[in-house]
Amino acid sequence: MPSQLLASDDEAGQPTVKPQPNTTTAKANQSMRLPKNRGTGFEEYFADPPMTPDEAAEEKTHIYASDIPFETRIQSCIQRFRARRRLHNDKARYFNEYLFLGGIDTSPNAFGGHHHGDLRHLTPSERRDATATDTVHSDPNTSDRFYSAGDENWSVDFTGVLAGFLSTSLVSLTSGIRHDMEVAVDVVENFLRYVRQHDVCPEYEDDVDKALALCADVRHEWFSLEKVRASFPGSFHEAATQLFSPSGKTAWDCPSVSLLRHLDYEAVFFTVCALLGETEALTAGKGGNIVTRVFDCTLEVVSVQLPDADLSQRFRSLAIDHVQHHPTPVGKALFKPTTIEEGWLDAAVDLPDRGTVSWLYFEHSILSNLKPGMKMALTVAQLNTGVRFVKTWHNLVPTFYTFLPQVLMKHYKMPRRIERPAPSVQDPDAEEKQHVREAQEG
Image 1 (tube, helix red, strand yellow):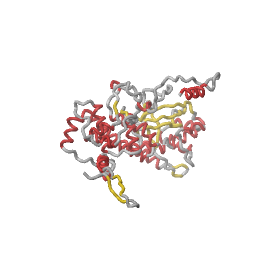
Image 2 (cartoon, rainbow, N blue to C red; image 1 turned 90 degrees about the horizontal axis):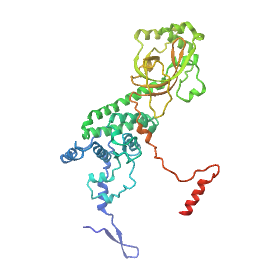
Image 3 (spheres, rainbow, N blue to C red; image 1 turned 120 degrees about the vertical axis):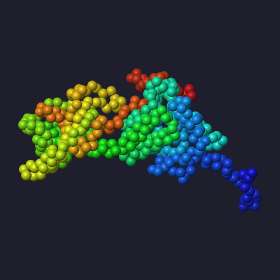
Image 4 (cartoon, helix red, strand yellow; image 1 turned 180 degrees about the vertical axis):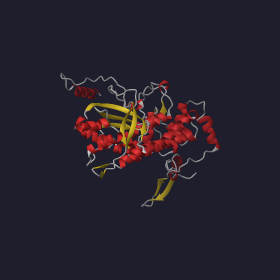
């Protein structure tokens, strides 16, 4: 066994002793780290190394056996996934938020700190268990950070949790930056593929596949949603708003119509009415069209009716005073009343034509990107001739929008009794006096 001390001579010629690094501890620490040349595990063509027959048998018969409760299996899966991936900075933050919405506690254990030297004699499996921080709470009294904790109030839904993560938390975590949102989707998609590859929960295989399909669909829908928001609600609604119901200063506190320069409002509005057969609006003219109702509503897209070839040709060939205008062809979008859950108790809204399908005119560029299932919160105005137009839009959400009550518990703290007297008119310095007494007693 080599000595851990090395001898050398100092300036006076006296031999001195210098400590040699503990190679055993260093090797043990290095064995616990991922190889530097392995990457993060999120590269485009990354693949996990093949398992040995013993490792595969251990997963099938011990770690992910069908007789083991799902909660235990998914905990083991998350721990092993973390060990095989480099989740740093934003990636770890996205993954922790996704797990939190799914009812898994990822908060660090205040008493779970371990030194690498204490773990070097453990097997990799024992080491993961000793350093694990992800926990599924089945007892409602275990943690107060989960909405209605307890098995009877929760169900396994990979697709629903992913949809809720993409709908609410992801936007606030990334500020809507497209690149960061893509990174978050890649992290969750990587985890779902790991679950699928290692056969963690075959009883939920279809649900995992649906969640993976959602990861692919969301990238395309984000692009469509961005294009809709960039031009929504369109020149027809802008023209009608400026002609019949100009928005006040307070209306600009929320997303509204982006004013287009050099837009002839009368030409745009009455051209669309003429080509779409709104004869009453044409007959009434500008002075006879009066706004009779303005209401807030939340609508869900049912279907889209694009302008046909004949109508599109009539729009393209339109000339006013022998000047070609080439307005954008206009079609219809059919809606039904709905709600967008956000965790707030909204006041009852008088929805028009409840139970029936209503419709609004939109330009072809908007209709081509609207998908059945998208929802929007609008302020709609109605003329005495029956024509409706969007005065202001407040929210526009994708088809997969899902609100999870768990998001309300992110910053929740259980109320506790405070014995300290509160300041009052009779004793405004009560709190300071209490601090002084506590300091003197301490």
